[in-house]
Image (cartoon, rainbow, N blue to C red; front, top):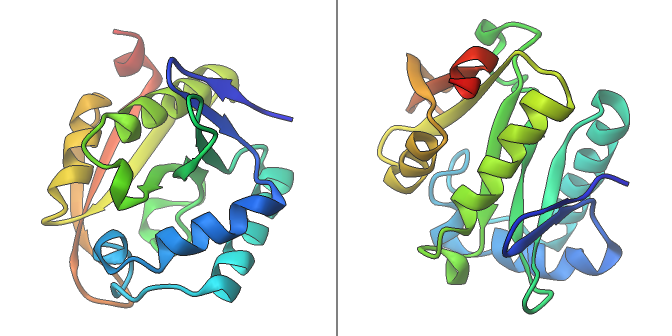
Length: 178
């Protein structure tokens, strides 16, 4: 079982008791504002998503980690790696880093701390040469985390389903090690 500890967080695989708190995060319109069409997700959708995330771990050797606060044991959200199939223009080898935190956990540096540990996991543990991050234009909080990771803008594109503008940032192993 893959786990990563940071000073304040435990990044780990999903447990059954993560479903309800993750569903609460997905049901928050503030959290979902920048995700797909902005629709909130219910318990059933969240259960299906967690199942897909766990399958990706089995198929790809990476996936989305549950973020647990070490101090309290609370589920704060997720971070991790996935293949961005919705943007085929990026190619079959693209691996994206992403994160989603409950709004009560915003502004405390958890997103950047979790994403930094995930980036290190991707480039050093999993041997990836390159990682991307995809953000919606206007999502300043995500752009801030992306900058903290040292990622640079590679291109702008449009979401193929929803039509809004996206930014694709990248970092490769040599940039990360510099």
